[in-house]
Length: 274
Image 1 (cartoon, rainbow, N blue to C red):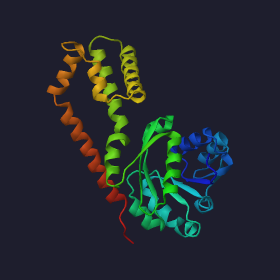
Image 2: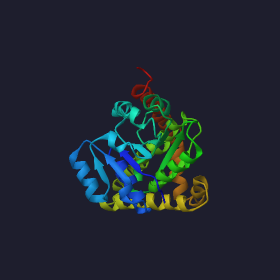
Image 3: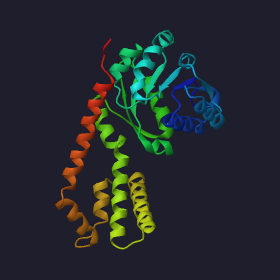
Image 4: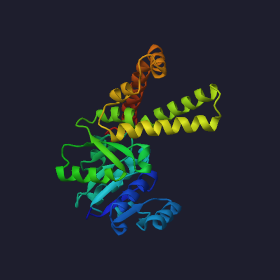
């Protein structure tokens, strides 16, 4: 169990999911402070979790661990305001803001950071988070950051920050790809004559079951696919169409486009100017 005090700058969905996960793992709510400018947001957080709340970022940043959970376009201003208030006690800084590079955060804050890329299933405690730490972040702080992010799922480390763009493309944006496949399977089922509600349930529950098999088993997805594909059967017929229609190339191109956009946003939202 964590013994450090923890502050969230921003009390939106990702902050709420982390707070809920950490409290469920035994972290006392009294060790958590959340700073958010919206009075209604603060009231909900205090009511739902029993945490300390404030509208003042400077008050919150006295904590030993600070999670930056504000919108990316607001992060530079927030970070620069916090800089002089964290210089003396040098807390662990974790960013969950998409698209902001660790080097930019370090420049704005004056401290090295752990940059993370969680995905939306973290809201249901089944997310996966890509993590990168500046070389100056001590091992103990890296381990602490991982424990915090694992409160809402699991995590993986990358040793080069540029790989966060690939993480974003695969897992950050990835849920939308699976939702699209479910959406298309539902529509295809309806086209085959199934009632919409039936087609939707079949698509969603099949996706859930396949995910559970991959999650709990040790076999690679390629192996699992082969196990449910009989030669000359219905699955083989469907997979042959996927191959003929170029699904592999489409997926590769889509992930590349997402990674490229992630890199572009890092330049637009960051930049060590000023």
